[in-house]
Every structure is written in C-alpha cells, then in structure tokens.
Amino acid sequence: MFANLRQAMLWLHSVLGLGCVGLLFLVFFMGSLALYDSELDRWMLPQTRLPMATTELSLDSQVLPLVEPLIAGQTLEQWYVELPNSRVPLLRLQTWDLQGEGHSRFIDPGAGHLLETAGSQGGDFFYRFHYTLHLQAGRLGLLLVGLASMIGLLVIIAGLLIHVRLFKDFFSFRPDKAPRRLLDLHNLSGVLALPFFLLILLSGLVISFPIYLPVGILAAYQEQAGKFEREARDLFSRPASGRTGSLASLDAMVEQARTIWQDGEPAFVRVWHPGDARAYVEIGRSLAKRLSTDAEPLYFDGSSGQLLWQARLKPAASTYSLLAGLHVAHFQQPLLRALYFLAGVGGCLMLASGLLYWIEKRRLRLPAGRAGLRSMQALAASLITGLPLATLSMLAANRLLPETLAQRADWEVAAFCAAWLAATLHSIFIVYRSAEHRAPWRAQCGLVALLALAAPLLNGLSTGDYLWRTLGQGQWAVAGVDGALLLVAILAGGAWLRLARIETRPARLEAVKDA
Amino acid sequence: MLEVLLVTGLLALHLSGLACLALAQNKHWQRLQNQGSCPTRVAPIGWGSLALSLLLAWAYQGAAFGSLIWLLLLPPSGLALSFTLAWQPHWLRPLARLLSRADEKR
Image 1 (cartoon, rainbow over the protein chains, first blue to last red):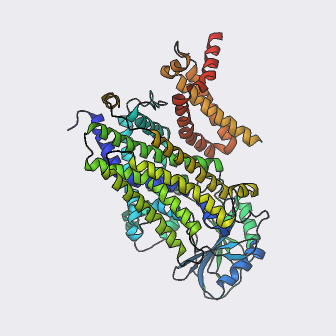
Image 2: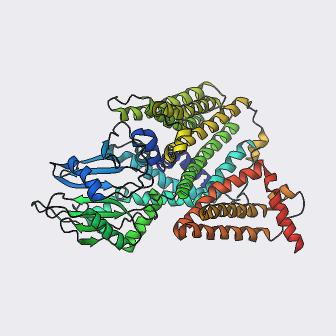
C-alpha cells in the first residue's frame, strides 16, 4: 500500500492527527489555563481578593473557632482545612458527612467569616474541563481525553519518523513561503517542546490509569474500594468508637510535624471522626517547593496529640507520585509555572499550525473545496478563535451577570457553551458560503480583541480594580489576568488588521512543490 | 538580587547557546556574514553555553526544578531565536562578528 516507511507514517500522522486534533487542542488550551486557576479564581470571585496574611495562622485560636460553629450539631466523617499559601489567601474548609457527601466553603482568615463563592466556579471550571471536557456522564470526557492522549503519542512518534531533516531544520522558519511557514512552525513548536509533550501525555495517562485499566485493580482488590489507594499511599485509618472525646492542641501537632519534616510547611489539616474519642488528625506537607505529589502525611491521636503513623511511600509509589506531580504542577515556583503555561500554549501552536498546514496544502492541491476540507476549515476556526472567544465570553459574563442571579455559576458555563456554539456555527456558515478561506478568521479575531479589551474594563467598572490600581496595590493575580487579557487583545487586534490588509494571492504551483 | 542575576544569566546563556548552535549551521552563518563558512569552534561554544546555563539553573532552583526549567526554556527561547533569524537576523550580527574574531586570533 505504501512505497516506504515514511509514506506510511505520513498517512498515519495526518489521519490520526486530524482525528484527535480537536480533543488535544481543547485539552492543551484548558490545561494551560488551569495552571493559573487560583489567579482566575481571584479575578472571577472578587470577594476573594484578600491581602496575603503576613503572620502565621494559629490553628487553635484562629481556625478552630471558625470551624466549630460551622460543624456544630453534625456527625461528620471528617473535616479538612486547606491553609492559605502564596497563591491562595483563603482558608478552604471541606466537610464530609457519614454518607460521603462533601461540602466545600471558603473562609476569610483575617476577618473570620464565610465567603459567598457560589456565584462562579472560578478557575476550577478550566481545571476540570481539562480532563473531563465537561462531559461527566459515564466519565465519557475522561475516557475521550485518555484515548486522545494515546493517539497523540502515536502521532508524535510518526511525526518524528517523517521529519527527515530534524537537526538541519532545527531553527528554520521561512515566513516568506506560503504553506511552508506553517510546516516550519509546526516542526519548530513540535520538536523544541518534544520532551514536554511526551512527559505530559504519558503522565496524564498514568494519573488516570485506575479508570482506564480498572481490571487489574478489580481482580486484586475485589470489593475493597479504597484499599488499593490506602496501600499504595501508605495511609492510616481507624474506626470511630462512638464515645465522645476532646481534641488536643492542633498547633502542637503542627510543631511536631515541622520537626519530623525538617524544613516542610503544613498545607492541610484533616480531622477524622471529629468529636469522637478515637478521632485522629492528619497533617499533610506543602507541595509548594517539590515536584512530587507526596504530601508525607502524619497522623496524630486526636485526644493525646501523639504521633500514630508516618506515611512512607515505597519507591514504586514515589515514582508514581513524581510522575503525577510533573503533570499536576502543584509547585509554586513562578518561573516554572510560567514555562509550563508557555509549553502548553506551544502545544496549541503545534496543533493549530499542523491543522492549518494540512488545510492549506489540500486547498492548493484540490481545485474546489471538498466536504472534508471544509469541515476541517470550520473545525480550525472553531478551535483557534472559537475557544478563546468562548473563554472570554465566560469572563465577560462573570462580570456582567447580576450577583443575585439564581444559579449564576451555571449561567456562566452556559455563556461559554453558547459563545462556542455561535463561533462554530459562524465558521461553518462562512466556510460554506465563500471560497475565500480567510473569511471566518477576520471577524472572529476582531471579536476576540474586543472581548479581551472589554473584560478588564468590566472588571474595573464592577469592582474598581483597574489595572493601575491592582498593580499599585500589588494584587499580582488580578493584575496578571488583566495584563494577559490586554496582551490577547493586542495580538488578536494585530491579526485583525493584518487580515484586512492581505489580499488573497493566487496559489502558485512552485509554492505547492516547495512544500 | 542574586536571584535576578541568576535568572538573567540563565536566560542569556540559554539563548546565546542556542544562537551559537544555529550559527554553526552554514545557511544561518552565511546569511549573517555573507561569506566563508562557520568556524568549527562555534558549535562547542554553544554546547558549553547551554551546559553553563544548566549549572546556573541548578544553582537557582536545585537539580529537580533547575533541570525542568532548563528543559522547558527550550520551546520559548528556540522559537524566539528562530523568529529572530527569520525577521531580524541583524540582531545576531554582533554575536557572529565576535565568534569570527575569536577564530581569527587563534
């Protein structure tokens, strides 16, 4: 069927690549945004724009008095407090009742009151969309993402085999040759970030392997839900006694934990069977300065405050934690987070330029637009400009919807979906109406620029936090999101102007041959 | 202050390392210098500069974070360099001149 290996790989690369480009673009786009989920939280939930605490919180005298009235009169399986850190100036309280129903709330640690955060999902929407695609039913989204990652790995390997001049073209970008520049951009962004792509796709699959390949775990741990995790992560548990008991000083336990971890800081405190005589306290270590997700939890007896158990991962589990940590990026080193973000954007660039190259070459080769070509043109527009358009519409809706609206968070998601659908329909309509292939781009770039300008303005109008004020006050999270939006506005506006100037040039045969 | 110095040095050495490796390819060298072929020393200088930047990255954030930073710097600095070579190649002329002068003295 194929003359040589390269031909076969070329076929594989384009067929599988076109098949999963949509899913992968979505995942890379949302994953990049998810790296700044806390910053987006601050932007989308203005009531959480609190100054960073300068003094350390005392669990006994500051946190417990806040938590106790909230859980009074309930029998809980556990409650959990996430302590403020350099990205999150809030306390997060989660409670689980005996039926396993969870409830999450944010507390202002300075003023000591609950914050009303039901009005928006904040950055969490993007974080979850990254791996669920907002398709919760039957974990369909997660399965699709897994499938796309596996295909993505195949496509990358096939792409490497096609790329004969890997080292000769390592820095080659020829912007004056029409379809060739897209291929150059595809090769450059693909090859330079190759280690990142392999790492992120593989570790993504590793993180969710119990869902992708449940059979092995089910065979070894029949009807013992949670035992696999308990053994792998070396967790401790004991049942409640039914008698009431008191809680010893949490601060003293944190002090003990600090001496055991040496230079580690606590990130969370979890109280199991609160109020029971056999209550116990789990304290986990901050992951801000490490790659691995291993929190090295310590377990203390609730009534005496004595150390009960110290979780120590076996090497195999440590390896898994490291791979997971490389993917979920819980570390807080700002430069490294920024580079992860840029690499994710680079992934979008690679996918977009690959798709556009295929379209351009097809367009030059075939006389008239065929159905396959046209659908790919519409797909490209709905991803490359449609997805930013939907995200920006969500941010604008976040600032425009009245605070009192019932189910406000759902309306924001509706705004996202509606804008995306509209952008997709617009591209389909334009692509089928005219042979002029640039048509959907110009309008959508203009709209992206307008929305990206409107969002910081709406933020300023509704909260008073204009960019100059947030910069002056050192609210870096809000200022950063505003700055990034303005950058998007400049880039999209520039593209809009350029697209207006460019006259469509007739395709030349030399250009086709050269590509 | 030390952090700013480390990060600047790290970025500068990473970029100049990649720039040397690009100039070591004759097509880029000839575009900048118009004649001759690239001195043989340029590629090793580039590798040395990249290795130094890795050392700086380790000094800045330790072996784990440092290696990751160094690896993830490749896409942004490689793309920036390729765009410079395509659109503003004269920005790299001082570096090319410096490299050829070092070769003449030898």
